[in-house]
Length: 71
Image 1 (cartoon, rainbow, N blue to C red):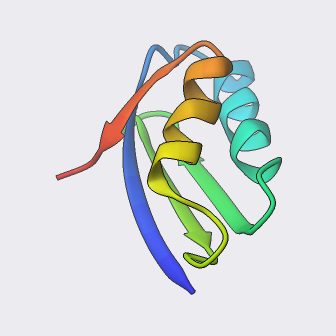
Image 2 (image 1 turned 180 degrees about the vertical axis):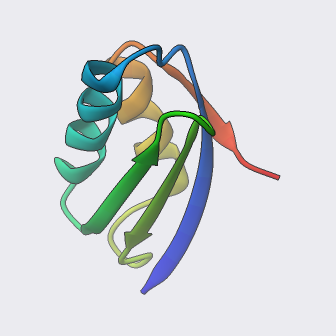
């Protein structure tokens, strides 16, 4: 299992937060996704044999938000 933090841009409310969480949790191989609205970060636990960072960034982008690796 791997862990990744992403910086998510464009979230302004709880609905945005839920939409990003749902997009991430919809990826096969993602075990958990916790999105922190005030900090603009998403912490994801996932199977790195099944999921790539690019897949997660794409899912967030398709949900209508920007994302990049935090740090």
